[in-house]
Image 1 (cartoon, rainbow, N blue to C red):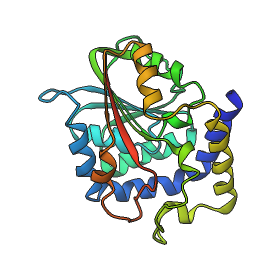
Image 2 (image 1 turned 180 degrees about the vertical axis):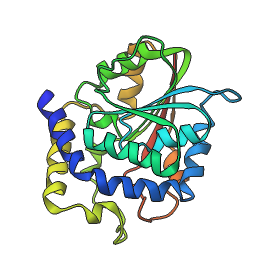
Image 3 (image 1 turned 120 degrees about the vertical axis):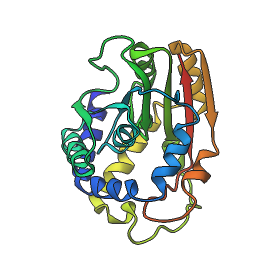
Image 4 (image 1 turned 90 degrees about the vertical axis):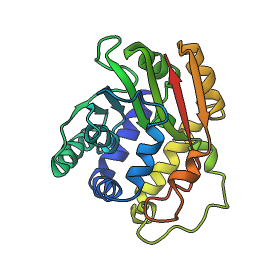
Amino acid sequence: MERIKHRVTHYWSHRAEGFEAQRLREFESEKKDRWLAEFRKYLPQGRPLRVLDIGTGTGFFACLMAEEGHEAIGIDLTPEMIDHAEHMAAVLGLDAQFQIMDAEATEFASESFDVLVTRNLTWTLPHIARAYREWHRILKPGGVLVNFDADYCAAMEDEDAPELPDNHAHKLVPGFLTHENEEITMELSAYEGPRPQWDVQLLVEAGFERVLVDVGVYKRIYKEIDEFYNPTPIFTIAAYK
């Protein structure tokens, strides 16, 4: 299982530079307000929050939260991603902090955060049940985990995905990385149940009191087939402690 973590980290180390450039463009696009609209459905309003962006990548959600006035910290297992997250925050002039850290075994004290956010991470975790237990531990009572993800392993079999524009990230990834991503996805599929139903079960077992699922977020975020378009339908899971 640790081998697959190393493989995922190695894959994203090759994607970090181009990923930052795209996330910066997304931050300046209409997508930013769409993401904020989704977050406002779940986040407590009217006060600054301590927010952890888990699997931050190049820091998109952490920067989003920092711009909203929250104390934002992002963690990622890929050092190159953290380097680019720090650069992205500097370019945007935002005060977000970043650390190299394993999402399944963080180094934070119990009940450290008001909010946990994550995007397209949980499908890559070989010990997702362990991660949910860990996230419950570091979340304050009454806090919320907001997880945007998709059943990417099942989506490998989808032959009806729309044609992507030439400037889409998937079109710009070198062939050897595309092949590596497919191999990683096939390996991870052996450990996952149907999502998001499986996630709900694991979150309840981890101790979360209330779990909400929204499968309509996909159409609200990805209205256009542009460079940011995700061909796999994402869902939102909001889990309250």
